[in-house]
Every structure is written in C-alpha cells, then in structure tokens.
Image (cartoon, rainbow, N blue to C red; front, side):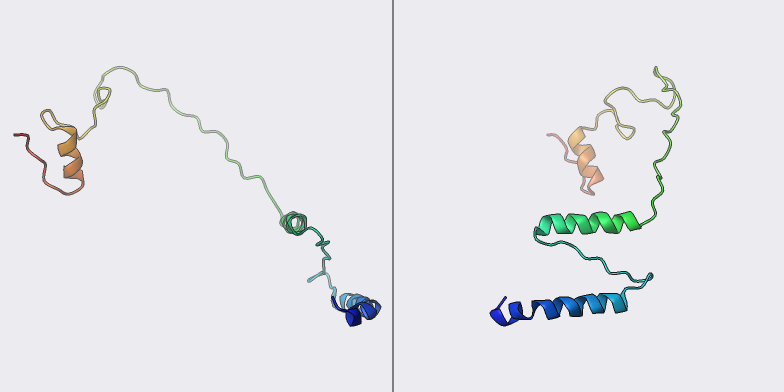
Length: 107
C-alpha cells in the first residue's frame, strides 16, 4: 500500500460502507470476512456458507441381515474354492483364461 492510498483510507472506507448499504439486500447479502490469517478466513467462509444450507440428517438405518448359513449344503462352496474352479485346472490357468489368454499347459 503506498502513501497516497493510506492518505485516502478514510474515503475508501466511506465509499465501501456506502456501496454495502446500497447493494446489501436480503436476496444477496454482503458478508465481511476478516482475512488477516488466510487459513482461518477460508475456514470461516466455508463454515458460514455451510451453515446457510438447510441440512437434514440422511444417515440410513442399519440393515437387518439374515442369519448366515453354515455347513456344506447345496449352493455352498468349500473353503478356498471359487465357483468357477474345476478339478485339474491350476490357479494360473484360471487367471489367464479370465484375462482372455489360452491356459498354459504344464509339460
């Protein structure tokens, strides 16, 4: 800020106050933010803007899950087996088939 600006500080302040009074309406209010510390100023602006938004808690209720099935009945797989696994097909061949490559035969 140069010396001429400091000399006109009072006029600048009066012009700012006049502008605020003329343009501050309920549909578009002015908010003055203290900005000496930028991080604090930004946090205050975010807090203020979020406080203007109507908020309704939309946390869903916990879901009620059915009881887990235990045992080895139809539709259940043995531990460690995938539904696409076949006897005699190695894990590597299964991965390559999934990626679109032909399976590698062990020699």
